[in-house]
Length: 173
Image 1: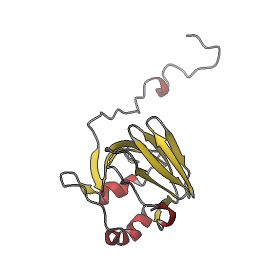
Image 2 (image 1 turned 90 degrees about the vertical axis):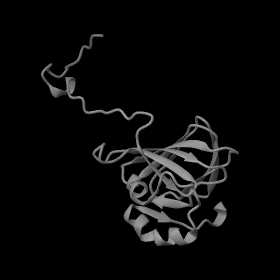
Image 3 (image 1 turned 180 degrees about the vertical axis):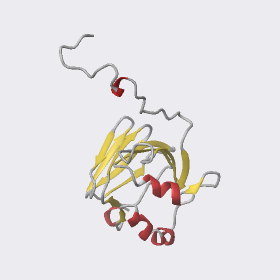
Image 4 (image 1 turned 45 degrees about the vertical axis):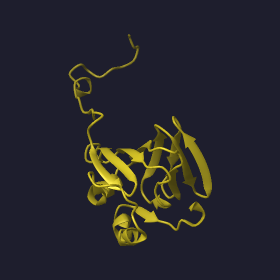
């Protein structure tokens, strides 16, 4: 392929700097948050704060509570199963292969409405919320149990420090 435009010199690091990275299928730190199992695959420390990525397995009839991110956009890709998403006051049904984007400051939540555990990829930009999962998620090896309201109430200030604000379930139940 030949381009008719100015290109960097061959001694420019753009040709040789290998600054990207690979994360293998079995890599990542696994944390449980209730009936959600997330492998934190990419953190802000790895991307200079630009992006975080998690791979989740969500039990049937479970998901997260309505919340907003004050500084980060969040996106989801449904790998398997079917999920219901809350987007403001709108409910969205998403199946395998669907992508959902939620800009910062938007009330949102998700729930696995499939009869089996289903897989969901989660992206944050910029990175940041993944730190909550790493620091406060339960270690793998114990049986997933829903987080009771008492635990969520204890985490309100901690979540706020990670730019997340929990909202009442209201019309989400």
